[in-house]
Length: 241
View 1 (cartoon, one colour):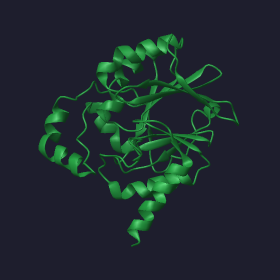
View 2: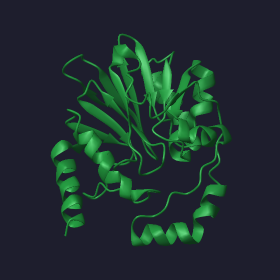
View 3: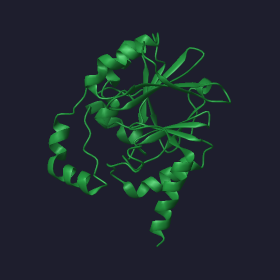
View 4: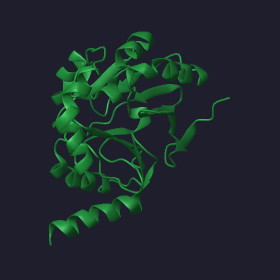
């Protein structure tokens, strides 16, 4: 019997299950038999994610929300869209990448990741194409604060940095699913890859402006608010030196 890690918001009793934590953490948000899946992982994990949804007795995904279009977040979107007749949502700046099933390699932010992307970045991505699909709804600068669906109290927040169209999902104003806007690897929450690293402090500031006390990344364990605050103020302090 698989035991899924679960969080529940206090205000509206919304449940969040981590249904996959291999290549990419994927989260199922639910209340009153309404189900939203956030991210779909890499395509070779198709069988795993379908098995886990089956174990949770999921027969309908009302929508699939993507934090961004990279292969390890959107790889199974098409198959899940068809199987569950789901609406798919993504930020407008990454709509074409989702259609093509192909994105470029984000830049490294550490010496080792900078070296990797400069040497083998494009070669890696040539093997990481996935089945593209259409999006039913896009997030833009004008509508990214809309709440949808209302029963789940999900607010969409544009948090670019890792990619131009990265978004975070604020659930009940208590828990945020943040994609690659931050990670939690060996105590460091700054993403090892980001196209616009200079935008990440502002994205973190946006997240701290919410009432969220917990942040669920796509890679690594959950991040407490005090850790995010400490890392954010470290960056600001270093910038002002």
